Image 1 (cartoon, rainbow, N blue to C red):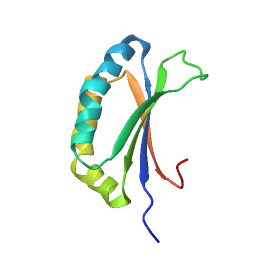
Image 2 (tube, rainbow, N blue to C red):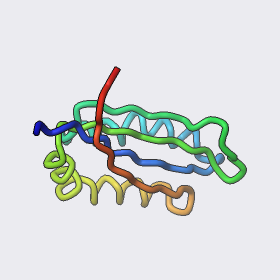
Image 3 (cartoon, helix red, strand yellow):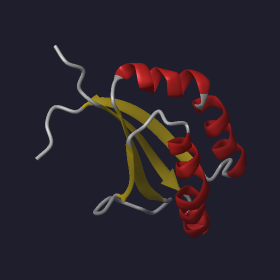
Image 4 (cartoon, rainbow, N blue to C red):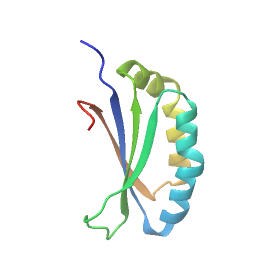
Length: 107
């Protein structure tokens, strides 16, 4: 059985007060730093719509990699530093959770 690509999804609720600056930082610095690890082949950022946003706006950042080995490489060698940078910069301004999915098909 061939390895299916893996989708690493980070869902973030960011405080309204820092949303614009955070989004720029994500696009210009954080996501390019994640992609520079060469563990992922594609990334995208999505804004969730039609969800309550009283205490923040929700986004998903999705990173696709070729296999679980690449994700494990990222998590072991790169994620702690990059996640700490985000935590230090936006402390008490966000909540996040991560999920991992196996890509079954693309159309």
